[in-house]
Length: 565
Image (cartoon, rainbow, N blue to C red; front, side):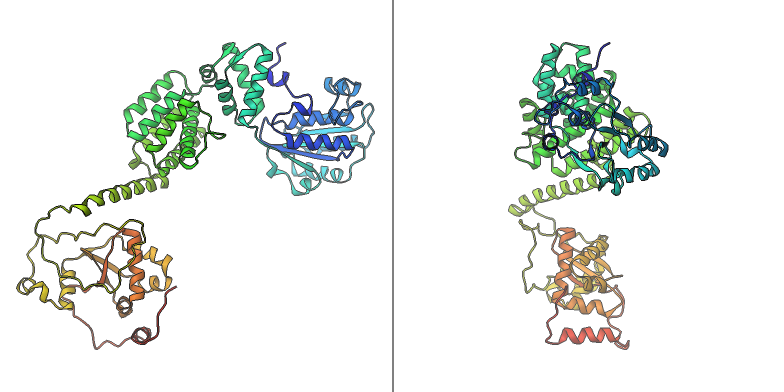
């Protein structure tokens, strides 16, 4: 009967185990020195060698002719344990034997000395599946076992093991095997099997296996069933993966916003019986490669599995994308893959995902929105430079009152200067007679404020400014809570029924904080002023001032220097 490769090439000695030297070296040293523990716990992802090491350890502790901590494989104990004739080594699957009674039957046997071997060895695989009662039954024996008993526990979910069990075991963590180590081992096995395996194909199999040697051997087994000359195309056909050319085509469609190209490519792949969920995963890996190329100088050394030509294409694509766009694409693909696992039509889900990627405005994902904002900011910044060099001619606009010059030049907080704010066009209605009769240059401060208020429009981002103000100073943000704002050209006019707001506006310290919040939200410089509704009375002198208003006004008029947190 044919034996599959992962069973045929299961490691027989510690030296055969790939990528777990930190585990095998420690176990060999313990066996060589005779410091054998009563309980071991092997943890790690699937296919990394946990059960294989447990089997090797069971033979090594019972070997009659051990050399350098390795089982000889020839003595009666090694041969008997391997073929199952020695019953002192028991393998137990906790997934199907997880009750208290199953563990009690084991505990009833441990008191007896081994009949043929040196130690009774109990290998409990997937130990995290044991019930709480079974763990409690095992606890006392793990703490004080008979001297002739060794427990070897294996699990893929260490978080489900009780702390009381963990503290009584010697723990070994099995890491994912490096792709190059897997590829090298696959080449050796292919040579022994008389199969031609190209290096690119071996690397692709290793990448698909995701650090699991057993998965890699299973994929190699499928590839051998297709052809004895295994290339990258054979691997893609055996695993249902899309070719790299399709990935670059889909990525180009995303960058160019070409929805028809993306949908037609997906349809072609679907007709070729390509798995949509695997295609989604591989496209996600492709954007991950672009992300690593964008953020790391030598990402291709260990983290990206590509040929030289593919790497050059990926580098050109990475140059055309922003990091925020790449991250947004990965998040959208991951969300789509999660929906595929929940059920439904995978093809429709992946087509919807590609439309979202090609048309970011359709996505409500936070990452997509941030990417759109970043592109808008970059476009505005790029378009501001030509206006500064050669400002275009503008039509005559209603004359604005000249604002009072600032005493201090405020820092923009950016490396490049902000574009000069252009005043908004006044509503198309006849100006009041008082403004037309009197020249702007001759207006008083009160008349200028009245002129600005008559032509001001509501400022719809004021709530965002107040939220930003909280990060700069909570005192000022609290004082301006409940206020509204209006905009007229370079002016932000703030309206409130409280005189406290007016007092704050007169103080340069608080005014600078508000301007900083405005810059962070709008990326523009604004001047501040109070808003007085047209036709309202100037000041209610008869209205008594509150104690807090009097206190703030006295502080502002004194020589005490105000600081804002």
